[in-house]
Length: 109
Image (cartoon, rainbow, N blue to C red; front, side):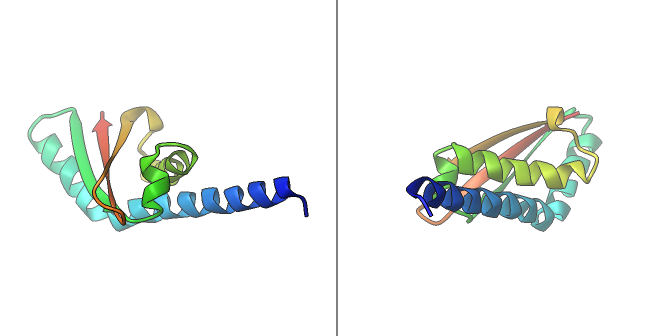
């Protein structure tokens, strides 16, 4: 094993974990996201915003680098299974504390 392999192997593991965590975040928040979308639609809005905490690798996510991108990919992977397209989403993240971030998704239909 080389030093490069050590780095890339650990990075691949972290990326895969973030993708899985992002998909789990979407699944966990499905009912609340549905409520937010239904409420906004009932008011005649074409956008809806939903925020929830995310505890997966808060230091990696708040840096908005590779781990954040992988986490978003996991959320998107889940939402596409719910017929929501990538172009309908905008993501942001805010630090809460050392163990949690708040992820916000804005849906535009």
